[in-house]
Image (cartoon, rainbow, N blue to C red):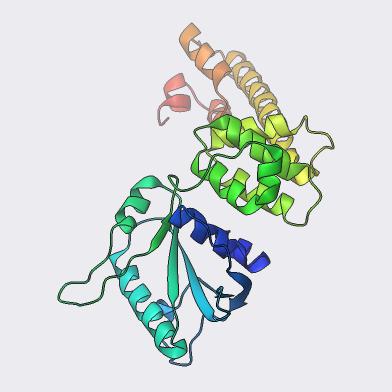
Length: 285
């Protein structure tokens, strides 16, 4: 999604660079998405995730490469060396490599200067991880950069108030990016946090479209229907066993009544119709 964010708004690459440098990029402007392919026809594995050109205060073009890393990859380092070098050689200008990491451990691995053995080259990526992303809660801060706010909420999801604040703002402002980013944020949360967030979002005014809240209701309905179906199968099984004169212990009765696996109950019921004892019904399960 960070790459899609850059496609939607190339200037976002400059914001990532600024947060990674913990400074500002004043004077840099005219961000423009560039092709990730070079005339040098580098192998596919050496292609960059996203490339944005910008003009500096002197009016000359520079490039910002943005890569998204979920885990440390030594092989990826060689890809960056190849791409940064090729881009610099082709355009004879500066190139900044920004690496976005969702977790602190991966960010720490990339934060140190990278110097391949027996090489004069030192590669120093600008890392944007949880430590570089600000905690944003105020509506005006989220609206100032929905992209940074979304990544920040994901990186700091242990702070659930921040997640809710960002999600609520994303879900209630009129912009083509808003629900796309909200859906991305929701998808990056743990199952427990996502369910908690969706319950809260059911109360938002105006209401979110059904596709963002209906999953909770559908899951609840499905669970209710499944429990009702299982109870019916359990009652039927007990009726069949009692009708055939098979003695059922209290423990076995409770196990049947508490079972929610309808397939298992159906299997027991099928066996119970012809079994001569309970071992033939439950023995294999």
